[in-house]
Image (cartoon, rainbow over all chains, first blue to last red):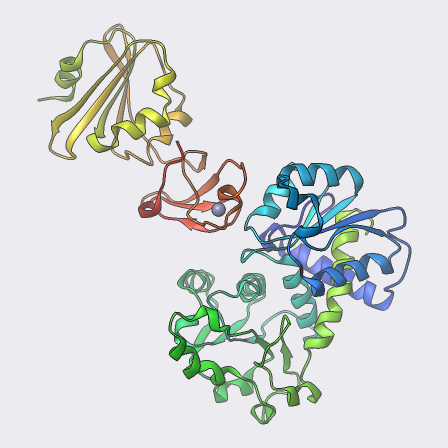
Length: 302
Length: 154
Ligand SMILES: [Zn+2]
């Protein structure tokens, strides 16, 4: 992983995932040190994403590193029409590693090819967001004690949701069973089902929350967004079918944990927040340790 | 009429390359992909020739030029039935069919309007994930471009 950019979740192998998870565990026990002392990390946010940026910046600050960069394209030379290539070449001169978020798909791969320093993709449009997937894996490992043989429910927008697609691909290395709960129009794309079939992984599709959730180990919730529906009537019909309420969690397994990439809109009822099975806020904190693990291993410090 | 007779019909070639069985409608794409407009030696074209398989076919004869396999294979995307003859001293010394390559650089546009290759000056690059149906996966945005969506970037 040393000196290698992290652009897509496929850039890492199963062993790499496990290494990051082990390291994240170490950083969770010991999140403050000066291991990044003397290192400059650029955070280039060509579109704002406060949550992701703060997580990266917190990760770096706690390890004694310095941050330079910008928080949206309007405050940078990009506004003046500078090409991505020129921005990256310039910034690479000033930093040891670049974290970037950009609305254009494939921008992070391109940046990693022109940059002299490693690039960590913090989201390139609807394409990839690998650090989110790694923090999801860490959260699953931490709550379940293992990644192997888990029953995973993916709920909501399974058609467009990049986080669920990446999570599905990564978890497929650990012999899971998947249950998909989504409106008919937002079902998991065929290419993923073909992939699961080819690996002999069991999966079930449901239109609604079912009694099957009593078998789940992980319930991964996502937003069902109005703009994904061509027909607004269709949205009105389904919008309340994918809201998780506290009473639905009765009779579920003790080890079940609810995950959500955040921000949520209304897909998890507020009353669930106090349920011990709600894990989404801790999941966000895990992002800091996971990003510490990713940055230090790419810089060859761990 | 045999292929060899048709080859002769356009005009005899001493040394060079004959590309046959191009479907007539793809002739100009093939010319662009192989950058034949930049070649200074003699080139002859025949088009709207009869062919049972393709409807109307086209043929190109390029004097004194021998293409690299990787260049020739680029035309497989446009004209998968094309056949290639290398000619030395008026004789066919090698016959081959074009083959869809494993990767494609340039030539084709990515179907995704939000892809970096459609937004900045970045050359496209694809992995061919299905050779029979010509399906390409973008190296950058990771979206698939299928045969029916192919737009040439010439
Ligand atoms: Zn693309």
